Amino acid sequence: MQPSSIKGLLAGVQFHLRCLDPSAGSLLGSPSIQLLLNGFKKEKPKGQDIRLPFTLPLLHKLITHLKKGCFGPYSDLLLETVFLTAFYGFLRGGEFTTHTKRFDPSHDLSIADVTVHSHNFSVFLKHSKTDRDRKGTTVLIAQTNSPFCPFASMTRYLKSRPRASQHEPLFATEKGEPMTKAWFATRLRLLCQSCGLPPDRYTAHPFCIGAATTAAMTAPVSTLKAMGRWSAAKGQFLPLAFHPCQRGERGP
View 1 (cartoon, rainbow, N blue to C red):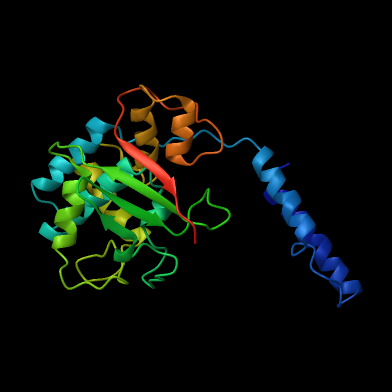
View 2 (view 1 turned 30 degrees about the vertical axis):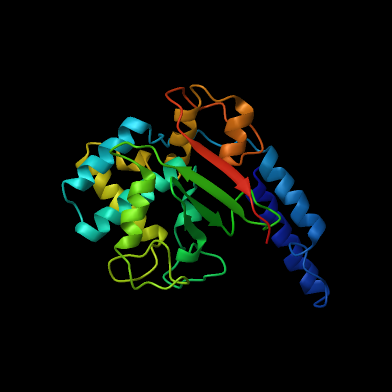
């Protein structure tokens, strides 16, 4: 039985309980029931994931297309920086985009969360899918000395926003609004179509998958788990090539 079906049955039981006793507590709000449902979700095998990884050659293809001009100079630089940061930082879509245009500096990435060093830069993630204790995670991304260098791209992007305050969104659109998931997905889809890639197979998350695919060539499973912040090994990663990316933890 699907967890959603169990939840529906519980809702039905809850309805009848409230009919008999209006003061009856919420079943779905019970911590024990929530733990039980979460356990079912983890045990239930997921359907086949049709998403494809953005491997290093595909990443280069997207950026090369952006450099020819797609959405305007600023948006092209923004997307280039996001692509490289997401790839080399093993970032998931929800870690570098916002859900809405309402920016929350205590939750979303702000300029203050980036620290540029001489040969690398760090990004502090205030929240993460795997950071259940909400301690935050610092991602260190190294200079690659290549035409597709994440360090060079981030440096150029930050210089394009000289008047931005430390508490403004790190990734902001040409209108100065935070880069939402919808804004990013729309432009990624258009870019994939322009590059001859099936847009329904590529989303924000495949940057993280592609990074792991690339790193799987030489990195052991333990290193992959640490770099991607996974609690379990991901068996679908394909070996390609390793890239420099280090991770560390930072407290509240």
